[in-house]
Image 1 (cartoon, rainbow, N blue to C red):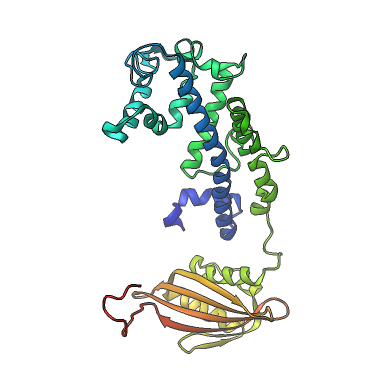
Image 2 (cartoon, rainbow, N blue to C red; image 1 turned 120 degrees about the vertical axis):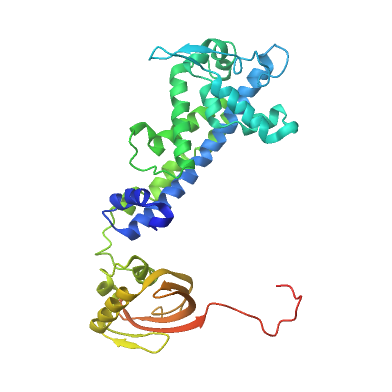
Length: 363
């Protein structure tokens, strides 16, 4: 998982979950799901914003040429502004580059509509800043918004949306943000409020006065992910099986005795049998010393009618002196207390072949 996510990224999730690896991975999934919900609303707003701005500019820009391509346009011409440090910068330098890059993506076929569609959200967010107040906001863009809209407040809100959008796009954590105004609930409320101002039809995004993000957090609260005391919560059969398989990858068997009956019988696919947790712990200790499990992926689980017997199909990948992979299935049985009291493993070669298949046959 460190190779996949990187240690610094994984550490944020482990810290939030008090070092519990299983919960950290659940939190990572939760964060991605929350980002997908919020990004959907931002996508609606982004399309409405760029189309509203393009329409306003197209209707009112009276010079020759399209407002995106005309060198004298308020987004293209040199716009010098003094910075706080006293230096001078061109406030349109980034705009010109964004337009050039968007046009280059379409080559000779670059039409105004295609450039509008390929401009990044940051371009549109940049149009309401202080540097463009006199050349863009007053003559053009203020007409897009309700009368009396405060440009500075609107600019701050759009910049927050853009910052959150970038965090989602770069798979950053959305929970416990460094700034309270970046809380997903707050951002989603801003998004829907501004979208409603641009397109009142967007009111359907509110269901019974509740945003998508609010509904997501009500149904899947953060505290339920990061604060669950799983050491005391009884595992379901599926959770117990997945937790056991994960132990070999994480090399953390601290919950083994919680999941297994003290009288468990374990039959490996190539012959050895272990009876009781004492023998199992000795076997596990020996294997940890000589083997590194890369993956133990579960493909399917089939539950018997008695709800206590489960057949699990899997693929096992490990390294000892050499790396190896094989497929198999486990017949797992649970006792009346919900602990695993029997496992029988069966193995098969991972490589598959079709010796009787005719040459040229599809499939």
